[in-house]
Image 1 (cartoon, rainbow, N blue to C red):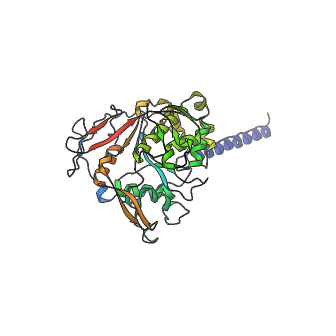
Image 2: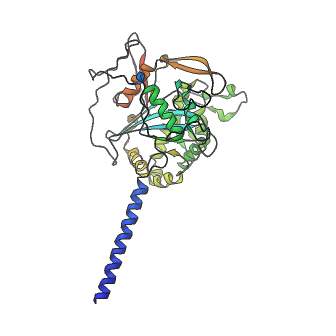
Amino acid sequence: MNRIERWLFGLLGIMALGLWAFVGLRFITVWQTPLGPGLGLDTPISARATITAPPPAGPTNTLIPGNSTLTPIIIEPDNTPKCGGPLTMTILAVGSDTRASGYLYGLADVIRLVRVDFATPRITVLEFPRDLWVEIPEISSNYGITHGKLNQSYLYGNRGMGYYKGPGEGPGLLARTLDLNFGARPDHYIAVNMQTFVRFVDAIGGIDVFLPDTVDARQADQQGRWDLYFKAGPHHLKGNEALMLARIRTGGVFERANQQNLVLCAVRDALLNPYNLARTPDIIAAFDGAVQTDLTPEKLSQLACLAPLLEPHNIQFASFPQELLRGTRTYDIGVEKEVFIWEADFQILSLLVQSFQSGNWPARSAPNIETVTPGGPSTGTSFSCP
């Protein structure tokens, strides 16, 4: 090989290395690029949400009205996260009630704070009732709106309304509202509208749900629709059927939350089907752009990797005790009429949120429990996937 040939081969080698480096950097950039605007949480937590809990002092929760002290459950941490993830990740999960394909409008029909523990592994999910009457920040210049239902903060934040100019659009304003009122601080968000939920359930082949009791909304609907009837027992549900079950609330919002939890457990089971596990990258790719999220492809892959490692009892759903919520009605300036709302002692709810975010509630070793303080309200309920 003469000098010119060596020079040409050397040049080609350098060009090849440069091309591979460019492709590699491009892949890393895309892999670590959020799929939507970040939350950018910088709103100071309100005074009522900055309660400092006492140090751990025992194996039980204690919540006393008027005293508002909470003794967290002691949990020894495992500092070895799985799947390349962080120790923990907190995600604001939203189910939008819009039937459109986008996210310009829509109320937050489902609001959940999801804590993902990559070390245990474990997932805990806290439900926020959508009718909580809350202070909504950063939109008062629009018709003097300062308060509303929790689910309205998501609507006011999305681009269709044009009320909110901060980061994160609807999920961003909802996150700020949760922060301001309860001290909840998610790291990321994911919002799914009804069309996308139906498509997703169909894409994974439907879900299998066992209902302990019959769910019958035919009489309430006054039209006798059979798609509003689910008898007790096993069901294999397609997307539209799963959506209907998740939205029916003949037994009230608390029973509907239980139905939604059963649906979420069934989705997890379907995803763990070997056929769907092999298709996970394709399933994620098929819904690129159809979901409102700031998660990166890297973080989505970490969550997908964690799913097969989750034991059913390590997927727990927590809710605020019903006795802490008081139903009443108030005038809503945003919709210009009187509406039903939940009132509550936000100081107590903030303590529960703080315990949830620290991983102390619900208790890791006590699925399907309700802890009740003698002479006072329960510290919340928890439910584990069957």
